[in-house]
Image 1 (cartoon, rainbow, N blue to C red):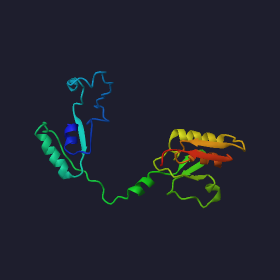
Image 2: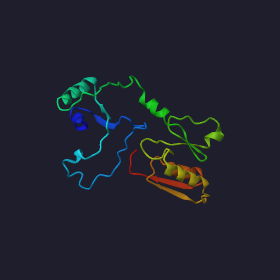
Image 3: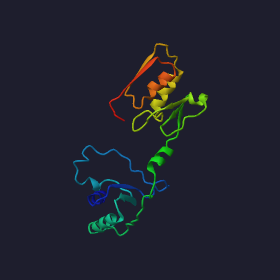
Image 4: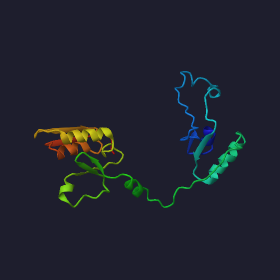
Length: 193
C-alpha cells in the first residue's frame, strides 16, 4: 500500500499500529533474516498489525483523492477512511523555530542564538556567549558539547593555553576556552554551516 501511494504522488507514507500507546499495542520488533531481501514471498510470513493507520502526505486534497481512487481498483479499501488536514496558513516558521530554541545554560554560561537578547546587566552579560548555531553543532544542546563546555569552565587553563577546536561547528568550544582563560583559540571546520 505504501509503495502504491508513493507511485501515485504521495510525498511520504507512514504506517503505525492503530492501538499505539494503549494496552492493545502490538510490538513488532525483530531483526530481519539474512536472506530477507532475496525472498520474494517474505511478506507472507512477516507479522503485521491487525489494524494499522496509514498516513500519506500529498500536495493537495485533489491528488490524495485521485490516489485513493486509483488504489481502490487494486486494494480492498472498504475500511479505509480518508481525511484531509491542511497546514496552518500564514505561519511565520522562522519565528516558530526561534521560539522553540530557548537560551541554553551550560554550567556558568548562557548560550545565546542570534535572536536572543543580550542582558543590559554587565554581570549577567559576562555569562552570556552568542553563537551562530545554524545546522552546525555548537548550540550547547548536544550532550558532548555540554560536557566539553563544562570541562573547559572547570579546568584551570594555564595562561599560555591555546585551544584547537577541530570540527568546530559554531566555534562554541573555542569561544568557551577563550572566555575561561585560554590565551588563543583556533576553530577549524569543513562544513560551511
